[in-house]
Image 1 (cartoon, rainbow, N blue to C red):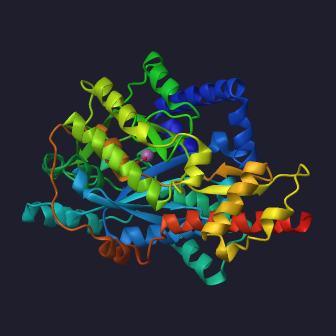
Image 2 (image 1 turned 30 degrees about the horizontal axis):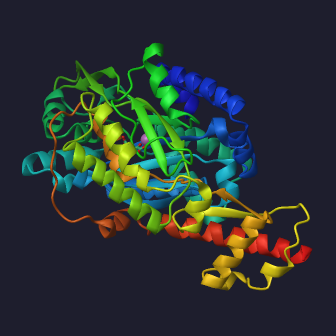
Image 3 (image 1 turned 120 degrees about the vertical axis):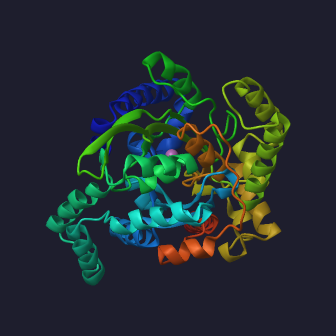
Length: 457
Ligand code: OOG
Ligand code: NI
């Protein structure tokens, strides 16, 4: 997919080069980052870290997409409702869920389902539905292979190769649209996103995202490389100990498209939807940490009194910096205050730890005595903590990424209830709770760490 996208959107290739230069510089300048990535097994996956995004039109497309990703060990994690931020979709992310699988392939796909019910104009809604019902975004072969995978519980090597080739077709760009220019324009007038989904043959991958170790430097250097960045970096401010996710993108390009007309020919026009993005990930936050993050982010945005843009970017960063002074910025405090998730590792350097261990058993790891015992072991240097990387997305940030790429000046306002249940019904499965996944990783690592200590004691 990366190869295909670099060919389709050459500017993305330039972005990848810039990111990998900056990553190399950062690793050379900051050996502690290199060491940390080595410990968590992420150094090898640094330059292949990617996410991408697609937008789907119907429940049937979403449920088949779930089955397609399942073949690759990618499962729906999290529910994101973007309607309150003026984007008529709700979403999940398909990704690996075990540490080992994540280290092998951290690729995620942010997958949105268009909410046609949010189109107010009844006739347009029907036309949109009819256009979507007519398209088939999966090849017959890929559907056969998905069914075979489900029946056999796997695919042979040949079948897997065939699967990758066939699955890729779904994500390809098609510059001939199946709708008329008039319909496209009415859809566009409703919302850029509706035109992008309904107006095309399939859910073209709309961006891919490498991981950078220094997003501020990449953002600053983009312009110099002829890449126009969006106005602000989404997410938390720059910190010593990165939390969650910071992201920025270059603006979507205007691309030539041909609209089918009634005479069987084509009318020319253009469409902008595809862009490139970069991300910098930090430690995953517990519910307590996340609540603090949301509170501080809202505080900065309320003080700004509007959506961040080119004109108020400097002020926004200032407000964000001062709001986040209330968020502890060292791993030890993040750990001790229960704000973030960590891996625990037994350190092999002959520290005497016979005292603390008796207080510990994992089932009791949440009790105060156990917490104190772990804190003591960390303090003595017998146990080391390493941040668990946040693997998911942030709704406010995602809305900012969507908006910057829709050339959408008007601010839409969608009321109505968030509908995870309806989303899961369309998906044909429940989404995994991301917080439960991080909690499980942390507990498992603690268990292993205690076993290791026990065997040494
Ligand atoms: C998805 C935008 C959200 C992210 O990284 O938060 C996103 C889209 O534009 O379809 O990719
Ligand atoms: Ni993205």
